[in-house]
Length: 494
Picture 1 (cartoon, helix red, strand yellow):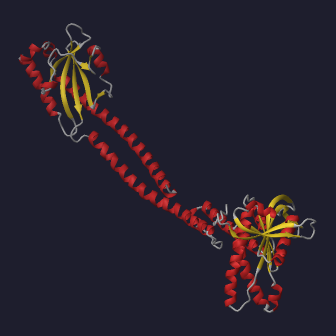
Picture 2 (picture 1 turned 180 degrees about the vertical axis):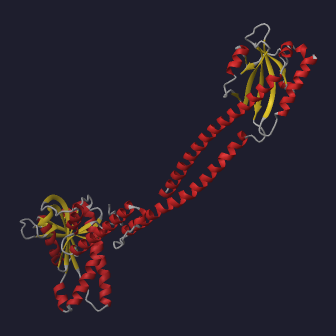
């Protein structure tokens, strides 16, 4: 889910929750007030009607057999007339009835006269008056005491009671009036009337939330596009946020622009110094933000020396610009091969180069990578020679020497100038083997220490022993001629 969608949903949910809560609270409050008003009307009807009734007639109606008496019929007709007169659009009387004490127990209340006309709901004289399925056992006095409660509502009905007294003031009956919401009662209309404003508020909130979320998210999208452009290498891009959006967006835009400027400066420095110090040293400076320490470590590496044979004689017949162009094309191809085989360019030596395998990162297959790189370098040189010969340039040969062993590897030099390199007898022997390729008439010469590790991978030709300056014992050498017959594809393990 996008930030804009989340913001939109949160704003809409907040308005909906707030509006819904207020609408519900108003509905509950208004409904309560209206129900109290309905109950007041019911009490008013009950009190007025009770004053018109004759106590003696009510007291004479004690059983179901009394329903045939003229007095009962007259009283029921009178109550039905009152009921019908109060069935209006604003007030709707459901029924009117009288309650009298039971003969056996005055705490139990019985029906007297009931205006109900539906047989299934009609109560006859002597029927027990119940509430919630249980007989009312508080007597007429208890009902009269509770008659003043304006919240006596049952399942949507509002019942009110008024006392009927004889000449002496004795309570002889209670007249009950039950009202239900009238056809045009506010109780029926209050719900829709309240939902309509809530729906309008929700629609307006939807519109406002869409506008606000769009205004807030648009600058975020712009800043994201700026960051994506920086990630793709466009360091000249600037992030700007209108001041009207707030201080936070302006500061964020300024921070992103400052980041782009810092990266641009860093890239400029890196490109400017990459021609003067090694890539490893430069990367260490850029990552750590400080000059690396002058120190080294002893580790096993494989060293490759490559040199163009007789290049001095060839270059004497060429213009300096042609020499530089030829060497640049040569090293472009060779460097690509070396890096593809996980080698590290240590340094360029005029028309030659020194390459390290196994440093600065460990490489358990350094010997295999070094020999594979040497074979690819010779293949690339042959391709270049075909091109050069077509351009009228002379063909050239390259000698490569490879040796494996322990050496000191690290940042070596001074505080003013340092380079990442390797020193030791292993390096010297690799250089001597490269020089020996001329005498042995071989393109690639490998020492025994390298040969022992990868002897099963490549095809070899023994080239005898070579007396190397600085060593008392001759060094056994081997010339690599390609992949072995059982391994036509080098693994070049990563």
